[in-house]
Image (tube, rainbow, N blue to C red; front, top):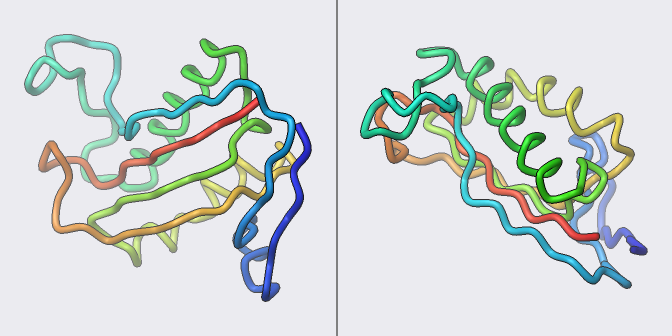
Length: 138
């Protein structure tokens, strides 16, 4: 798979992102549903799992990213295959203050996928503070 960055300005690099990327030669695409800080425990709220890191955006972001790692692995991929990230949060300022969690997670992969960050009133479960959607290709 060949990735060609498309940028009309350099500001995105400080956030480890390109404004766009041309992806060539990919034959497999993985689209993940929004990943949140829920563990694999069926006794959680609505039978969806137990909430990791209640009232802690930093901890919830780390837990959501760990879930993404597990799904990428299950699909035979890793972080270097990510071609798009979408973030939804109930607190944009807190998300940006904890951006280092994301930077430390994606930085070593050597990729800078396009990203979007949206502030929302609430997520599917009221205690959730962040949700991450991922598109990957190989």
